[in-house]
Image 1 (cartoon, rainbow, N blue to C red):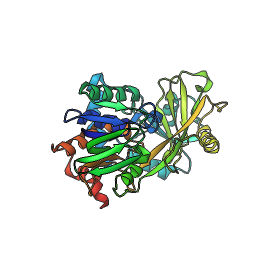
Image 2 (tube, rainbow, N blue to C red):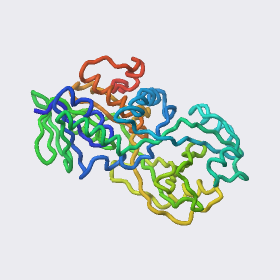
Image 3 (cartoon, rainbow, N blue to C red):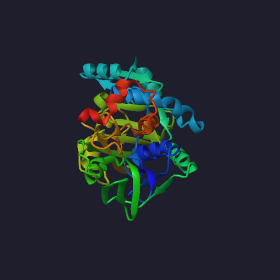
Amino acid sequence: MIDFLVIGGGIAGLSVAARLAIHGKVTVLEAEKSVGHHASGRSAALFEENYGNAAVKALNKASAAYHKTAHGGVLSPRGLMLVGRAGEEAAFEDDVQNMHLTEISVTDAAGMIPILDTNILTHAAYDAGALDIDTDLLMQNFARELRAHRGTIVTNAAVTSISRTDNGWQVYAGEMYDAKVIINAAGAWVDQIAAMAGIPPLGFQPYKRSMARIPAPGGLDVSDWPMVFGVNEAWYAKPDAGALIVSPADEEPVEPHDAWADDMVLAEGLDGYSQHVTEPVTRLLASWAGLRTFAPDRALVLGPSTQDDSFIWCAGQGGYGFATAPAASQLVSDLVSGKPSELGSDIVAALSPSRFA
């Protein structure tokens, strides 16, 4: 009998599995041939404490120490810049306030990102505290913690049926698994997993986001450039392995699936980026898409179902999964083990599945 059966091998599933491994026998089931195949493998991977709503920001802040110190840390300097044009003043100011940015001159902004078009841009703001997350290392760290406590990860294990038993649950994923507790960390598929278990879905919505990798503009060294956003997150660009990732920051509601980039959406996003810079986009090195899955209120859903306290939600990470993973996984572990959470009771309530009851 497995104590904790975690469905989903993305950052949510691996982190909570690692936390729970000190409390009992843990098995992670991942439908794909490797962990982190879907949203976790397609993240922009920025740690910005002031990104998201109040509950998400609280998780970000509670995760900071782990990100900085655990296993030597997974963060490195990046910085975050916001740029705007004439007519965008009100939206620019809203973004500055919401993300606690500091306004800078367009000249100073171009000093950091020399391709910015100073003839077009009228506003800029910056936060030096935004950091890159080594997402692969973070997932490896959690996987090592899990295995150090004799936890297991099973890949190519798509769940096809779940049934309640007198002692817990029976889950079929190529073979039968008996478990006392299910942790639903299935990303875009969390509502489908809940329905299999006879738990009412909570209304999670996956949204597709497209990405393109383009060559370093003008052959410049982009390694020290900050991540840059357009107003209202209309697009963003971020250095990646000597090139730039550019996204239209699109949010197309879709059914759960292995996502791919839409050429027209990418073209529109690249055009938005191009209107702010002096170097044209001449070719793509690669393109892809990922799903960002949100609860109706866009806060994570962490804790036991109101219908059955042996069915635990670890869901709705949206675009915040890596940033919030240390604190989110600790909260789930605390709730399951009966340990008081270090998060405030208001934040725990804001993240609880009971808010949808």
